[in-house]
Image 1: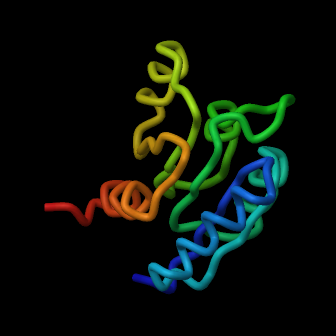
Image 2 (image 1 turned 90 degrees about the vertical axis):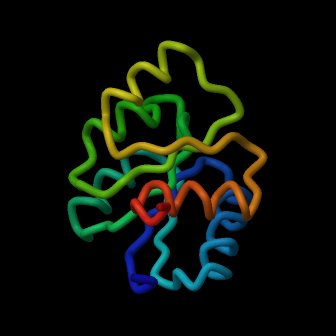
Image 3 (image 1 turned 45 degrees about the vertical axis):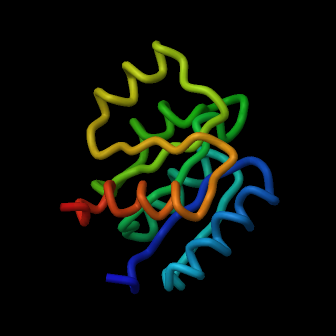
Length: 122
């Protein structure tokens, strides 16, 4: 299970590196990072992702919700954000296979979100 491919999408390099480091500490070693929704869509067309961790607003032109709608995967998506509006929450709930983590991300919150997203919690 830890050989899964994980895609991390965040405009901020510091955030990508923090999440990647946490994933490595959880023994997920196959991690691909990108900074925007367009790259995430392209990567998902080339690589079968098992899990996606994505900022709700990865860039100004294509937000996380729109990216998730266009992405070619059945992988669960963990959205991260400073805030969740009622409108965004409604759209995200309609997507299915979605978990949420509020920033700042902690190891515990990310690990719990991964377990929930992958259906490992009993």
